[in-house]
Image 1 (cartoon, rainbow over the protein chains, first blue to last red):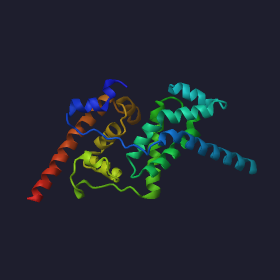
Image 2 (image 1 turned 90 degrees about the vertical axis):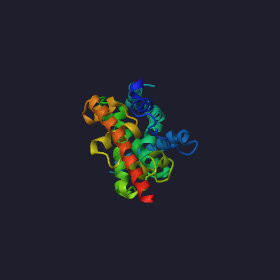
Image 3 (image 1 turned 180 degrees about the vertical axis):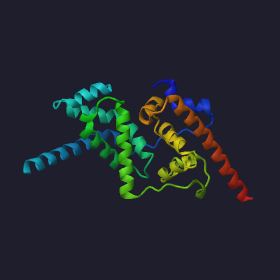
Image 4 (image 1 turned 120 degrees about the vertical axis):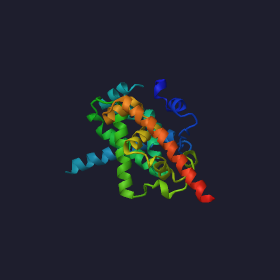
Length: 56
Length: 183
């Protein structure tokens, strides 16, 4: 990310004191388990789709 | 891992799952932040984020690399948020004048986050609202915004700077009204 793309730096230059966005964090451990959660759901959907294709 | 490497992994059946995993690991935080800023609870954000990635997996074969990968995913995430809002009607836009006048930062840790974010930008001209949201809340670069909106980076910068100044002016005006009505 170039310095120009850094929103904090940009705001400091154009409007010193302008409130910065605060990030809202998910519950602890969320990002550790999320990839597995979404991949498991994907596999389930793909397997359901293949079953449907087979039945048809 | 670069976007190109991820797309290559995804395009081969043998490495597809690893590609999907790398994609999620690389972009989950950024997309979560984008979605979470638009809905009122973590649970809603989680649902939308899962739906977004499932849609990305389904359609990534159609990604032609004409825009940045994130820009392409950003559009999908925004559409998922809109679909979710339509289906649940949980999010209501808020009229600036009908609400109290706490400064923006006072809202950012509340449960009514989505409504609060709306309040911060409502009252700005339409284009400034859009540019302000994309730059301030979603932290898109001017290059990414220019690609999506088909506008020049200079025009977008000008819009954002106007929006920041206008938002300050609106904030001062509402604080003044509050002060007068208290007397």
